[in-house]
Length: 300
Image (cartoon, one colour):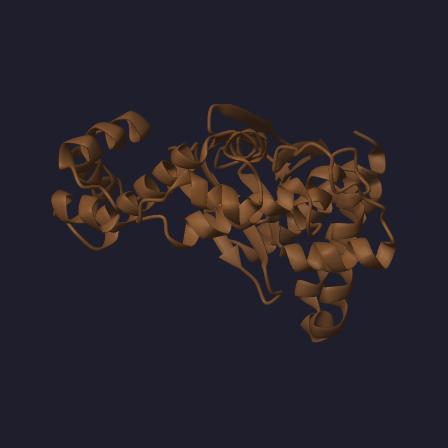
C-alpha cells in the first residue's frame, strides 16, 4: 500500500474512533454517509444492500451474493450498483483493532448525472456486469473520502461541500477498472438498467407471486434473455432473488414484530408453512422458531 494511502487510511480510522464509541452502523450529519465499527467477529447478517460505496480501513469482511463470495479488507472498497439481498459478516475484528469502515449510499440518478457531466460514452448493448464488485482504493478516491469525512468536524460546510465531494467520489468510481458495472445500471436503456427496473418491481411486490413473462415484458426482453441478464447482474434468478427478500423480511418480522411463524410465513408470501420453514432453515441454518429465540437471547 502506498505511503500516502496508508497515512490517509490511518487518518480516517482515527476520525471514526473519535466519533464512535459503540459498535454498529451509525448515520452522520452528512446525508447517506455512515460510519461503521465492530469490535467482534459478527454472525452472518442478511440485508438488502442499497446502491452504495463502502471503504474498509481496518479488519476484514465477507459478503455473500447468491453463491458468490466477496472478501475485502484494508485498502479495498466494495460497490453495489443496485439493490441486492446479501449476507455479510465481519471476519476480522477485536477490541484492540476493531473493524472500521465508511459507507456512502447513492442513487442511479446521481450516477447518471455524473456520466452526463463527464461526457462518458457508453455502449448500451454491452453484456450486463455483476452489480457488486471489490476494487483496490486509488489515492484520488481515498483523498475525496477523507475530505468528505473531515466535514464532520466542521459541519457548517456540509450543505455546500458534501454534495460536491459525493459527486467526485462517484466520478472516481466510474473511472476505476470496474466502473462499467456502475455505468451500465444507471444508463437508461442498457440491459443492466432494464434489469434494475425488474429488481425494483420485485422489491416493491416481493410478497406477491409473479409471472416471469410479465417481468420479461417490463424489461423488453425475451424470457431467456431476462434470466441471463438478471443472473449476470445479481448472481441469482428472479425467483431466488424474491425468495431471499421474503426470508430476510420474515427474519426481521420474527425478531421484532411477531412470534407466530405461520402468520409471518403468510405475510411474506408463503402459502405453505412447511415450505417456509424448510427454505428458512436452508438459508439461515436454523428453523424459524429456534432462530428467533437464539437471536433474541443474543440481542442481534
